[in-house]
Image 1 (tube, rainbow, N blue to C red):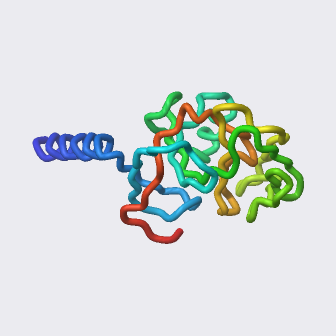
Image 2: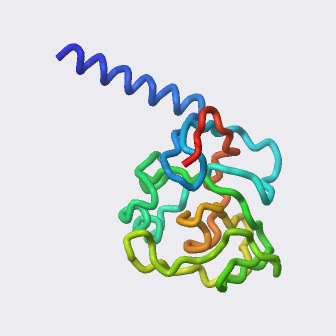
Length: 170
């Protein structure tokens, strides 16, 4: 019994240390697997920034968590943060077709999939102008669940820049 109690204490201490140091483990293939650190963003967020952001607790994200696209975590609605690249910012125009375009420029590796890996229907974002205080997020991983499907999300959930600590390819 003492060993189980000690194991629980060690897990709680590791979890607390990870939270205090901004450490996160990425187990999704959207970016390299492994240990990442959330670094403060000491300037305005820019296109191309690799960031951690909490998704808003909306029915779309709850469905995504139920389907296994997101894991449980400490963001609102008990969701884990997203690790994505900022592809577009407020005022930019997103067009969704066979590929995504941002201000009439093709977003590389942005083919939309009609179904997920288990054959469940995926709904694409309809497109439009990124609203104030929002960002359009992307990952070049073909199976990534990103703004191609859920649209721009509020920057109020931005946790910071994502910095790899110890990672390896998916």
